[in-house]
Image (cartoon, rainbow over all chains, first blue to last red; front, top):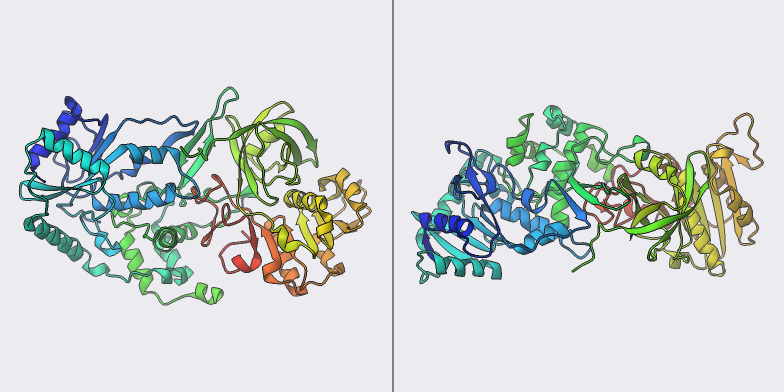
Amino acid sequence: MLIPSDELESFLRRCRDEPIGPYRKIHVPIKPGDGGASFSSLAPLRGDLRLALDGYRSVDPPKLLAYRVREGVAPFAGSSSPALLAGVKACDVKGFEVLDRALINGDFTDPAYASWRERTTILSFDCTDVGPTCHCTLTGGKPFAETGFDANAARFGQDYYLSAATEKGRALLELIGRHARVDAACTQMPPAAETRRAEMTARVQAQNEAFQRPKDYGRLRSSPPQAWQEEARECVGCGACTHICPTCYCLILNEEGRGGAFLKVRSYDSCQLHGYARVAAGVSPRPRVDDRFRHRYLCKLVIMKGEFGALGCTGCGRCTEACPGGIEFRSVVRRLMEMPSGERSAEAG
Amino acid sequence: MRPNPYEAVPAVITDTIDETPLIRTLRLKPDRPLPFRTGQFIELSLPGVGEAPFTPSSSHFITDIMDVTIMKAGFVTEHIHRAKPGDRVGLRGPFGSSYPLEEFEGRDLLLLGGGCGLAPLRSLFLTLLDEIGKYKSVTFYAGAKTPQDCPFKDAFAEWHKHPQVKLVRAVDAVPPGETWEEEVCLVTGLLKKLDVDPRETPAVVCGPPVMMKFGTRDLLRLGFREDRIYLSMEKKMYCGFGQCRHCMMGEYYVCKDGPVFTYARIKDEEGIWD
């Protein structure tokens, strides 16, 4: 269906204010402050906030909502209130697809993440702008979601073309149809929206022209140790890159019960921190910064690919944005992929 | 609704046994049994303190009571050492792979362990004893730094009596004032006296990383097969099911692909002895 952009925004606000529909919590990207910023961040929808449904992905990844920085997981009561997350971009939808495989699978299900996913409807939006570090096209993505969303809004001109991919998404579109001024007769993506998508894809590709790379990153395993040491020179091991990554989910499980009762609280951890893999007597398999730096690149580009069938990098570029050392993920990968193989491959021989 | 994997089963401490100045065994009675296979591990937590992974040290044929032998090595284990009979702990698990007993049937077996690595081997050994008729013989080489660092002191005397069992203990050194009538050498030094066919004998190795490394090297030199050397690996295992990612060793998770690995399977991974 088609909906004018101001009509969709007003529908979202009415979902909260009146309220229309079942969504007790609605999160959207907003423009901070006076709205002059070029970036957006995620926030619970409020009347006085400026929405940033278009543009490129928010500064903070939506995994922060689904898999919280710190939350009690046992005992876990959870909430059953339906929620709506609107305005996420394709890179973050892909992030959820990776997290789904990691956190809801045959081995186990994380109760808090599964509960959030089950009750939350995801309304993704096509990108209408490119951030300075955006590089989804290098990781097999596009600036619009093709899978993984419940419903999607493709912007063209002053309108959105809305489509649904799941029951939750169809329920949302049905609600929109009942409460907003829409053209329900339009059931095919208009050519203008397709053109817009192609233009956006070309813009991301143009921005990343210099970083073209092959799809198989296996050779990173054999990049010489000195090259990793060189690349890690500005790394302070703070873990910002992992905390802000839409697919990182490493955790610490703490026991914080009182009065003899058990309470398990999980918090984010980072493979970039020194104590991460340390065992009894202080022994660590990755004692140096460059060991840990290398581990992250391999995890994102090689290990997760093997585990989940998808790269652990969705090309959102947040790690580069967050790095106090100014380390440019794309450049590091390019340089290392161009390196001749080093000693490690000879060892593994 | 699927069971919550973070939920612990409460267990009461029924007894504590001081094995060495640093190693203590807790005897636990869980509110409901946690059947495990020898070699698998559990996560043991103290309310409000923390949680850490341990391999039970009792036979897997006993399900109502579980022994866990713990070395004081950090914050959580120090608190566990302070726990008293009647205190309650939480158990999650069991997790990971176990020793493949069916592969051991009809064969001579070698158990090579040192220090707190003797805890999983005690579980294996007791499990083997429960069905000793299935195995040809069990050679158990147990090492410790000094005589007072030897765990399971009383039990060793009992185990010695079994006809199919060859039990040899070694200490690295005997400090002045202590007495010792058994071997004085590194536990790997005992391998010189081994009188089983290395090509046909599965070897199970558990101990500090350096002992595992040199133990494996010596076994290979003697002619043991890479796919019959079973290693109980130690990494930091927070969750037990491959979510926290701390225990990654190359492409494997020690918690769910291990902790028991054959040397053949992991020999090319990085940092296995770290």
